[in-house]
Amino acid sequence: MVTLYCVVVGVAGSAFPVDIDENKSVGHLKKAIKEEKMYQFPADELKLFLAKAGGNAWLSSLTEEVKKLKKGEKTALVKSITQEEKELQGEDPISECLEGMDPPKVKQIHVLVALPPGTSSAPISDGTDLWLSKFQHSEVAKLTLLPTRGDLNEFIGQPLPVKIGLPQSVFQAWSSPLILGQLLRDKLFELNDISPCEFLKDSVFSAAFLYPQVDGDATESAFHYFWDSIIRVVLGFVFRRAYVNYREINICSF
Image: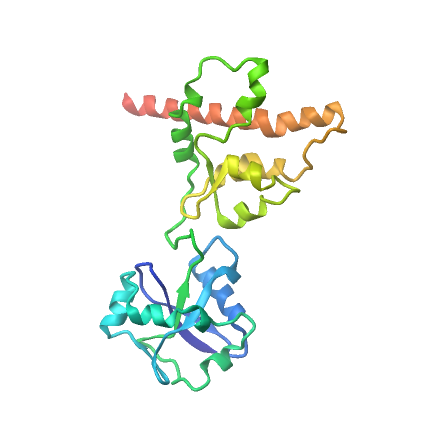
């Protein structure tokens, strides 16, 4: 077992230790880092690099280079270390990666971690209430009359004025033609790993997407189910949640 101190590149924060068996692979190290940092995307999307200071030496925590690294700065040395051709491969054993290097010790940095584009290591918070607040202030929410039957198809075919945030793993999974498909997904949802709408996703959408979508040969009861599970439930959630928030605001004002 070896303890490797890791730092996330481009993000302010301290080094964190990961204990890993040297006989394990870089892929196992990625999984351990994901669990330690509670990231919401697949572990194989992390990119790892050895924090070499030159020769067989590690970056020292006492250097200005590492102090800047912990502030989220990308120095010339960090950019050099994290070049694409230096990325550790998931199938490589840890022992092979450490071969020729000094034994890892405290007050050193051993692994630099690069996050996938569009993600953050910031703590995750639920964004459902924030999304609902923005939606209620959109032009769609201010409509007093529904479109006519002739205009309804075009109206509901528009993208949401405020898209619903999803963590990357779900955002990618729901692009499957068996769930939503990329075109419909992009009309309704956006990638948000910092404050995804977890409550909205879990309580409204997830159960509905476990079932096949309605096609031209579906029965009348299937259409009723589709309406109840997708449209009526979502509308009920939005308006009920809006009423609860309105009530709480008014109670607090007394």
